[in-house]
Amino acid sequence: MTASSATEMIELAPHALIGKGLHRECYAHPDDPSLCVKIVVAGNCNENRREAAYYAKLNRRGIAWDCLPMFYGLIPTNLGEGAVFDLVRDHDNRISLTLAHYLASQKLTARHGPALRRALDELRTYLLEQRVITMTLKAKNILFQQGPEQTAKLVVVDNIGNSDFIPLANYSARLAQWKIQRKWARFERSLAEDYADNPAARELWRVEKR
Image (tube, rainbow, N blue to C red; front, side, top):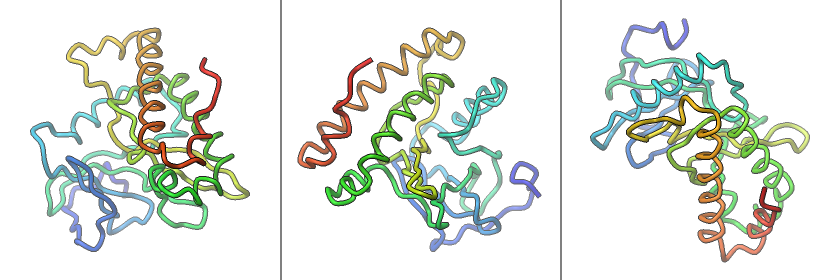
């Protein structure tokens, strides 16, 4: 049974909590270790419904899902309506950790420096080519997924979608790319400020601006 076809309520236990953001909590799916369930816990806006609507637009465009988790639909849970996504794991089956985790440690940043540099560049290219708009880009909302043989990529797992009152960039490739470039420049500036005391991290955004 796929997540989108599930009709029975699932039980989410406290020990299954993976992470918590400003508006949502993320739980491991009790019946499928490859999935997670996001529950809205705060705020006036239903992040799950907003995100589901944007994912529907991406599906209709037939984008590649290289740097986004797949979305499988909304399901009932004991904690309220949940949104089901791929649970991002490293090649050793451990749940992938955030980019913030790797940038907070000079030792980790230095160890994974080349892979992080490539992954950042590849994520920027992915967002522009696939025209994926995010409300904000934050290191805590991006996972660094380690693959076999020193391969790695960044996966955006939150704040996906266009929050503009009139979302013109959803219908114009040129406007979408302009918006993505602006958000990426803001993202790089925030990284440089937030991790200014990490010499190894500073090396990551010493790239030629396009």
